Structures are given as C-alpha cells and as structure tokens.
Image (cartoon, rainbow, N blue to C red):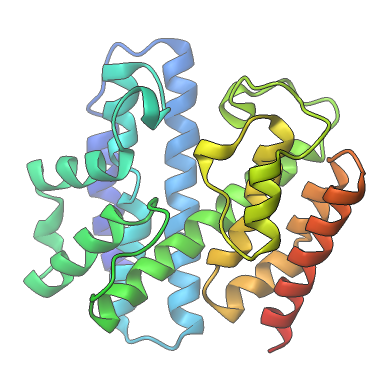
Length: 260
C-alpha cells in the first residue's frame, strides 16, 4: 500500500511541477488545490478502510481521491478561473488530462474504468442510473471524501471572523438576509439545492447544508457530526424562521443517519 501511495503521489507531483511561469496568485491557487487533492485522497482511503475494502480497492480509492481534480491546474492556467460555468467542467477536464497522460498506467483495465466513472461523476448533481455496484461504490467514496474536505475548509473560513473575503467561497454574491423561496423549497423537501437557484451568500450556505442529503456512509456522517460542520455553518447565518427550520430539518436528518 505504501509503495502504491508513493507511486501515485510521484505521478501527481511530476505533473504538478510541469507548470512554469505561474503568477504568485496562480502559485497560491495551485497549492490550495494540491493540498485539497492530498487530503481528499487520504480521506477516501480512510473511508475505504472503514468499509473494510481489500488492498486493491483501497489503493484505487486513494488514486481516485488524489487525481479527481487534476484538471484544475490546466483549467486555471488556460482560463484563469476555477469557475466551471465560465470555463469547463473540471471533472470532465480532469478525465481528459488523465487520458492524455500516463496516469492510468498504474491501474489495470477494470480499475481504470472504475476510476474514470468516479472522477467524471464526482461533481455531478446525481449519479447516472444503471451503473454497476462497484462503479457506484467508488463514485460515492470520492463524492463523500470531496465534500468532507470542502466542508472543513468552509467551516474554518466561516468560523474565523478575521478571514479575508474569499470570492471563490462567496461567488461575489450579495450577503443576503432571507433564503430564496426556491432554495428553501428544495432543502425542506430533502433535496440537494441546485447551484442555479442560488441568489446570495446565504443561499450558498443553505446549499452547503443540503449536501448532507448526498452523503453516503455512516463513517462520513461521523466526521460531519464530530467536527460540527452543520452547526458551524448555521452559526454563520442570520437567524430567522426559515433558517431555523432549514437547520432543524438538516440536523435531524444527519443525526438519524449517524445513529441509524
């Protein structure tokens, strides 16, 4: 396992170091994405271990976690943004980068197919129907691992009143004092909030709370509850009837999943 981690990480580092002439801002953003990728790989491995998967499957979970965002670097260089709506779908772009390189040399044919499916679908609203149990398993592992790390980054930011405004987290939207009607409707009925319906930073936070509806494993809910991610997001929101109702709905759902 250790050898596999070293080989995968070396492939990642060689590609990461191949970009030259970056601005200071680009270098900072590169490091953010590199650190995120490493943490997600470690979390994916931990989830695989909690699921009692075999060594080969644990290695694959680590690989998928490490390379799920590999297209982000090229995206930033070519489009100077991480905003998919203004550039390209970063999951599809990551898959293209992997296909164009030699990354899949580390995997056998079946592992490659599983990795391709998981990476291509790690950022999609819903997983396609009719897929195999293994395809769904690895897609769920990376989706959980990715969300858990993003929630950690977000709640650290929200919990720090002195943090500089981060436009990649606020989307340069107005703060907002009331939850949009469409956003409220989605979350209280138990649905993921669509990005397209978000109108303010408050809506963004409600959308982030709604991610619990797409968390798949009890061990993932353990991380959410232990780190108080939901509470920290809620504490950063203005309090009104809709916000309180949303938080209670989400918290009850998460607690039931954690205890169930």
